[in-house]
Amino acid sequence: QVQLVESGGGLVQPGGSLTLSCAASVRDFSIGVMDWYRQAPGKQREFVATITTDTTGRKTNYADSVKGRFTISRDNDKNTVYLQMNSLKPEDSAVYYCRYRGGIRDYWGQGTQVTVSS
Image (cartoon, rainbow, N blue to C red; front, side, top):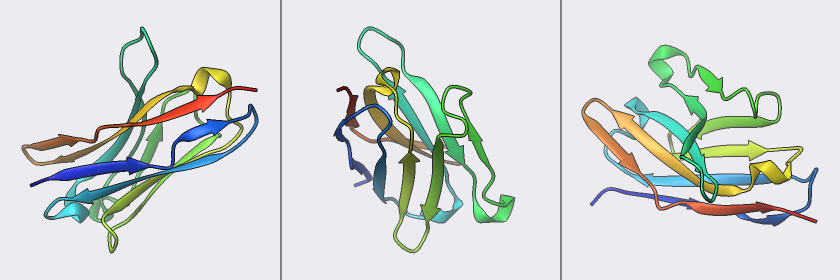
């Protein structure tokens, strides 16, 4: 059974940092594109960051709202993708989801809550 399990969320003060992890029990993790999305209350789920596969150079892309503050990375030996979040703002508060895309396979995790508040 495929599972994507996010962790690392929590409460942090504005300007603080958090690192999210997503552990994927999925076959052929290394050939899948990994994404992070987020959804705030009353808003649509939005794209945050993506990282491609080794064969395509582990290219990364970010939403404009997080560019320069967030960094996505992956460890294929651990089947895990990370999201390092720095200089957090209250508007970054949301449930953060990871997503695996590989061929016709498209899987989502259950999400982890991030709250940025003083």
